[in-house]
Image 1 (tube, rainbow, N blue to C red):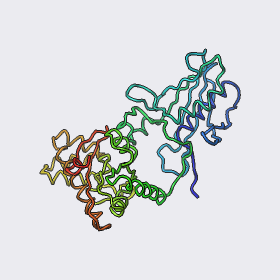
Image 2: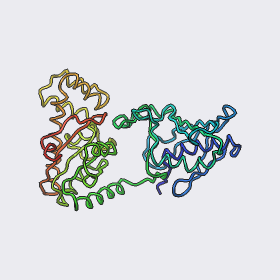
Image 3: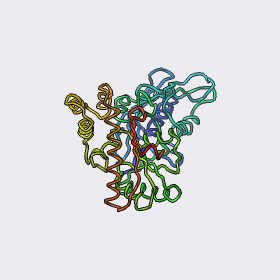
Image 4: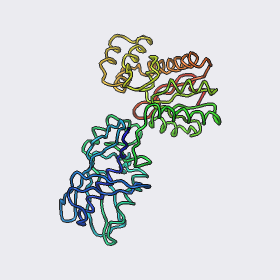
Length: 355
């Protein structure tokens, strides 16, 4: 049976609560702390806690997302808590090393996480004092390089986000079924759908002003959901995603999980050849470590617009043919590719009509 765990904000709050309680001599060095999850509660182990100065303590927890595939598994979360005379706020949250910040320097601690901090720490802070909490993720900056955080304005580390404290594992079949049901409901009220690959695609869609009623999340199951859209008589689908994921469709790969297939650089190289690029450009792409690095190299060579425009057209053509093959219907498909910064880098002629 799959084991559930907790989201990153829970462990950050647990570390902060442990440090604050240690300052108040309410916890010893090997106990756990109870966290109000809003709703429900959880008992979170504390790896270490110690005083650093008379009014400053540090506590450490380890992230445990359960059986979910999560890159933060066993990541240490440090909370440095300092008590001082009451300032304008009872609780001040700061981003330490490895916790991301927005472009304006604000700690990337979002609504649910802030509510957790308030619910669990404010009752413990004496009326005459302020608790300043600095969350430190020693591995955060390194782990953030494996995410799309920078594309959406989260710089220098990971964010404390989410809408729940429970990290509930779902099987692949469960996830796909959720996406299918969402599509079936949305196509009833909006026949022109927008498929968003991942949460980053969702944020780009929102920035483009696309109504939520048209947006369908796909995860890696783009092919299955394209067929579903055809079966349920959608008029069109606009594919919106990071180029490093979406270009797989140009190679006929309709489940974009890297665990199944990953031929991004080869697909880009084929497009370089198709537009008349030379062997030097092909080698530059194949020598790149990531699709993003390949894009940047082609941009330097003046080929990126032509290559990725060709890929966008190929994606739509392949997607249309895929739906025709498996659902026996004609579905209009357009494609918009964006880069790591969330900026559109290519779109095909169909996308211009569908926007």
